[in-house]
Length: 352
Figure 1: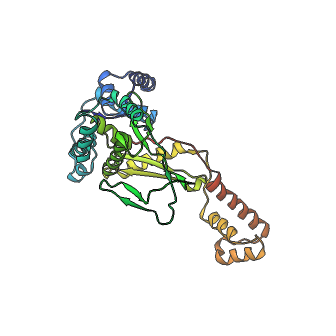
Figure 2: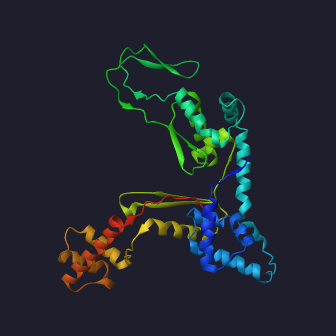
Figure 3: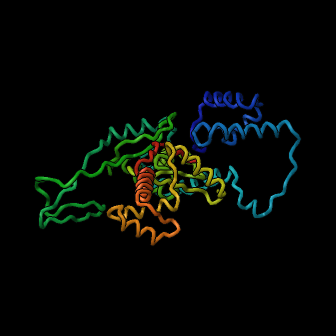
């Protein structure tokens, strides 16, 4: 059993090492091995951290290697309690997998469809494709039942119609297609195949969704665990985005381990935000935000509108109508730029 982590190409590591050495000089094998083992290099290769960040980390390691050992500093008990350690998430991942391994439905699936064994990762896709051929996906429809026809459950929980439905003249809508997600050996992309309610793929679809919800796994990780017993890695941080055609309604969602420090949360948000936002938009001051709101609430930028503004905000009062109208219109345009025209770069969010 191995911890399921993203695959990093050796050639990519070598290329990254050359890029870092061009910035900070020759790197010893021991320093580079430590950076690889501590996932510093993989963070850079997967886009989680920048090249500047990796160069700073390597430079510090090189200085520590060449200089005298730093004196041991005893951490306070409170500090030790809140410090994140790399092996903590690995231990949690193994513990969660051990719990899932004892799940009754996982045992039943492996016995019923895998002969009581698990597959190698190379066997996953051929097995899934074989099941798809043996149990082809059949589309289903939702129909409106005639008056007097009622569905009745049988002993297996399946429904029959009483009296039987003789013909269907029209149907309401097609039932949405459900897709089973899985990992292909040697690929970092998630694969998807249609999975109906019957057969091994239907059972795997339902089981992987339940495990994903229960343990916070990705659906492809859950199906891979059932088939191969590879242990899904539980990340310390998960980032997702809610996109909208109006830039002002886009949201970035960050879910972090409680051991994340506030500074680490801020750094993660800063990194993701810089990758998503395109261009620069000057922010509105409190005065101009209120001015834009005032203009939006009024039917026209006329004299009564100016008088109303001066009464509500005497510290920001205007004497001349043309200046008031000009600044109100500019404030409205800038607000529109922030809400509607701000460009959001499509970005694949990668958990860190």
